[in-house]
Image (cartoon, rainbow, N blue to C red; front, side, top):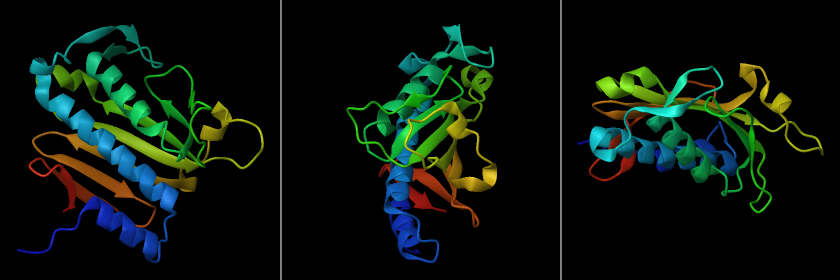
Length: 193
C-alpha cells in the first residue's frame, strides 16, 4: 500500500516547493476544502436533511434557488469570512459582493464561487459541485469593489472545483497542472488521488 498524501501535506509541499504558494493562500484553500466537506455532508443527507426542493428566491441569473444552493452559499461565507485570508467574496447566489466585515482581519485575496453548480440535478440525485476561483486583491488604499473581481483568468492565484457524487472529489490548480483529492469519508480527510 502506497503512502497517502493529504491535502494539507500537499499544500505545505507546494508552499515549500518551486511554486512557493503563500501561507495565506494555503490556509484559504484548506478553509474552502473544509467548507466543501460540510456541503458534501448536506448533499449526502438528501431528503433526510430537509435540504431538497426550491427556496422562494432567485439568484442573479434569475434562476430559482434551491435550498441547498442557499445553504452551500452560507457555508462558504461563514467558513471564509473570519479567517483573515480574504478581503471579499462574490457568489452566483448573491446580488453583490460580500466584503469581509471589519470585525475580522482583512486578507489579500478575493474568493469567487458558485456554491452549488447543477441545482436542477439536486432533487434527482445526480452529481453536483462547487466551483471556485481565487484572485489577489487589487493593490490600492480604497475598499473592495465589484471591479476588483473583474480580472483576467490568467491572474488567478488558484482555482478548483468539488464534485459531490458517489465519491467526493476536489480538483485544484495553482496554475501549473492540477491535483485531484478524494474525500475519505471514514477519516474525513482529503487524499491525493
